[in-house]
Length: 326
Image (cartoon, rainbow, N blue to C red):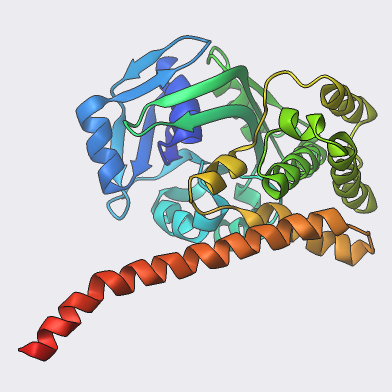
C-alpha cells in the first residue's frame, strides 16, 4: 500500500517514520524548508520505543503527480483547506483518506472535496513535539492510532489498512466505533485545552490552586454534556480515570494548544472549542466555562493578528519613506 503523509512535523513525522521503519512505502508531502531539512539531516525521532534516523522520500507541494493508496493527513485544522488542495492530485478512485485531526468539523470539508466514500475516521493519542532542528520528540510511551468506517462496518479497505499496520511499532487498530471514539477524544481534549489555556497552567498547577480541581471537573462535565446530548456520552470508565488523575496528577500535563499559545503560534480555537460550543448551543447545553475559554483564545488570536500587522507595517514603512524622499 503506497502511503502519502501530508506533513513531516511531530505527528506526521512520527507515524510516517514508524511506517517507514517497518519497510512500508512512504512519501512525505512537505513545504520547501522542511524538505530541505529532511534531505540534509534526515528524519530524526527520539522515542521511548526506540530512536530513529531515517532518510525519507519527500515531494514538494505543487509537484505531486502520482496517486496513492493511502493519504494520511497530519495537519492542523486551520491548514485543512491548503492541505486538501495539496493532496488532491494524490487521491484517486480507490484511495483512502485518513485524517488525524481533532474534533469532527473537518469531515464536512473532506467529504465535500473527496467524497465520503473515500474518507475514513481516524484519531491518534500521543504527546509529540518538533524542536528547532526538526527532530521529533515522543514525550510519553503512548502512540495510539485508531481508524475505521464512520458507519461502523469492517470493510475490505479497513482490513487492508489493518494489515498495513501489522508489525509497525505503534498501537494501531481498526475500530467499529470510531465516531464515538472521536467524540470521546474531543471531550477530553476540549476539557483539558479549555482549562489549560484559560488558566495558562498545567493540570498539576491548576488542581493545586484553590478551586482548581472543581474547575477541571466542571469543564469536563460541560464537554461531556454536549457529547451526551448528541448521542455519544463518554464511557463511565474514561470519566472515572480522568477524575482519578485530577485527584493525583502525575507530572504537570499540558495539551499542545497551551504550548502553541505560550509560543505565540496559531491555535485551533474554532475547531476544538468553537465547534463544540456551536453543537452545545444546538442542544441547549449550559457551558459558561467553555465560553470563557473560547473568548480567551479569540482575544489571543486577535492580539496575535494585530501584532503581525504591526510588524509587517513597521517593516514596510521605511521603504515607503525612502520612496517619498526620492
